[in-house]
Image (cartoon, rainbow, N blue to C red; front, side, top):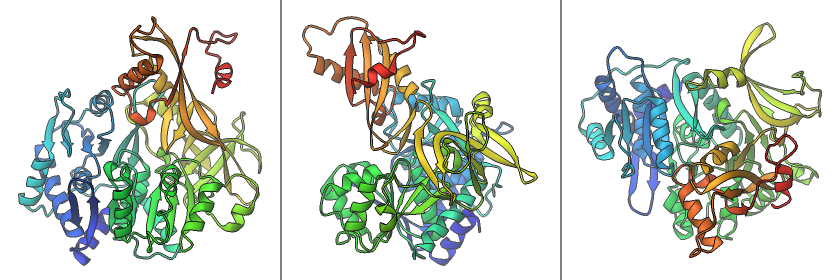
Length: 516
């Protein structure tokens, strides 16, 4: 049964069960399965009727943060025949405008107030307007049933040119992912799961908890940003959630582990941790198993371009006893992993190379980026049939048992707190600041995991006499937030008199590494 069919099934079988819940510091909002189905159908009818006739269907931007009506908007878009592009309120104005322009949206569904300085040519529906249409609109008996080749959502990620690039995920890719992910949950002894959601909906990790939860008929506890930043509210929320499945980045779990309250006593029903988005360290896994003796830990791996994740491994005490980094698992059914050498030939067991993903969850490509798509997305003949494939740029190796091990990136892309970041994206936007003439950014890495970003900049002039270097750097950080999300802003800065160059006249990053 496909996702939209499953949602209709749950709406008929358990119409009063809460599907989505957001307990934030301002207002508690919950929607049942019956409301989710009814409201998304009604809104889909409005979107369909108000759409330009005879034109190609452009994706619809949905702007907001952890509001259950965002999910109503997502489903309404696809039921009306449009892909949706989620944009979180943490995105700076410049990036929001870039995404709306690139998507060419005729309609923006704004679940939060747009920034004051944003003017859009698109029609805008506010939260109150959306609520009114959902609650008082006409019932829609017929909605479009999209097929597997239609784009379901487009996630815009960091791009090396300083502009975000959109990854197109089809309905077929999403359903293949959900079929696998629901089986992962079930084989860990959970048939009726309730999920924790940590990641914003503009981040692909959220797909793991949001749609797996809806597919399996659970209740999703959406942790808003204000709750996550307030420990007393966070732990009160977690204690009252009765959630059985935790989905987050390892970094968020590390933050929670800093308080001894975070344990099985706090979350008595928790039985499974699902991690993706960055390296899971041995230390984090050991502490979790100690604090949550009734829970299992599953580590997964996969880029946005392969629909969240494609490998899994259960972290056991036996695995933790081995003196080497934790593996990232075996490929799911419907996926093959190959390791390519520099000659683009398949490497042997234990030989490192680039990780290539082949299978039924590889994305269509990059939205309106033909050249970049052709560079990274392939069709490879295997066993007499062509399989969609993606060149990840990640390095790794397969051991004798076919288990994948991660060795880091082969380019200037990194993962920080689960967010994928192109170093070039930050550097390009640093140069938009008038006071900076040259810029380089390096990741600070410990135990194979990026801990922070460090900026090296050469100024166009001197620091104003009335400002200390520390305050001036603080101003530069604030100015940079106008162009890139806060999580991409380097934590530490070095002001250089000149940038070291190598023999090719390029920035000598090896010299800069000595200053980290």
